Image (cartoon, rainbow, N blue to C red; front, side):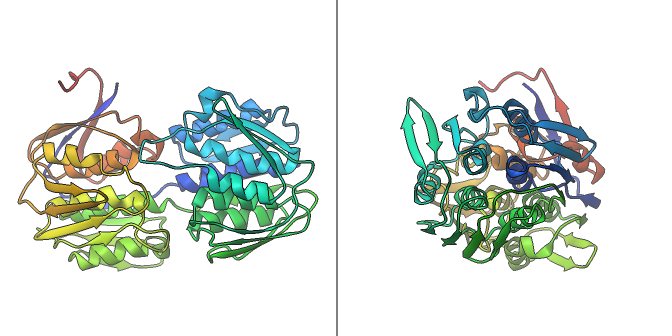
Length: 422
């Protein structure tokens, strides 16, 4: 299995360009299944999860062509509504085909989806919403099957502003009969991007970015061309990497409003951040100050940035308290930070971090996508060499990661053959 070898100590400097958003493209590609035309998607990132979603579309009978960063999807002749186990278990976002297939073809069957092991991510809100739209749901033997002659608009209030449930229900409602009102909806930028794409196809969706969405169902959707929004989590990761190394990095292709919660915490920690029309400049100093933070749905601090900011807090001055409210199992990286000399205690969903003067290079293992990025972040400032194992998980969400870091002056290599940790 491939690994990263990182020699810490270099201050990152220069310019880096953020790729198209992982969580946006993994929603917009399934949305192409709603179209009776051809959809052209620009700024598609080169990620292992995108390859899986491409295979999902091909498996369903869609035609998919990738030319550079542009993907063309023709779903006019989808031939099946059932996904094989191996695809659904590889990636959580595979469940986002449910809404489009049920809405357009009135039937869908798939195994319970997989993904990173970061805690419980049940399908109950997806399924409850689909039932309110008129679907018949059958759950048995590890499969979910949904049927409906035609979905009918309804009033739906989510128990929690789940991003996946919000996206699935928006897509399901686009071809439903009548109007659907979705309350307590997720407000994430990726939901707004989905709305914009659907409306380009002819859908009538409004309210994205607020907690109340209105979807007026129509009979069919056509062709569309769309550019994916920048990846806000990748942008936030590079911001923290610049800060932890005391570097000076200009980040291009970023929407500042999408990373406002990260900007706020970094400024509180003493990091200098300058926003402009061209991007964001981040200047770190010798040691940041400890800050407390709590993960929350957007526009709060994102759970996908919790681990990366913890790396910075591990070497910050003072004590920091981190509260994880989204996933109950998202502190697996703490043990790996401790191997590097961090002083962190976990009590339930709260982590207490006492900043240390320096971290030491160690052999560490990635437990999930964002934990892997956090371990790389820690390795950039650790004394000596750090080996980060299981980096296939990092490949799920960061395009050309080591190349971008080397372009900023980091000493990082992707290698094979280093002995496993005993």
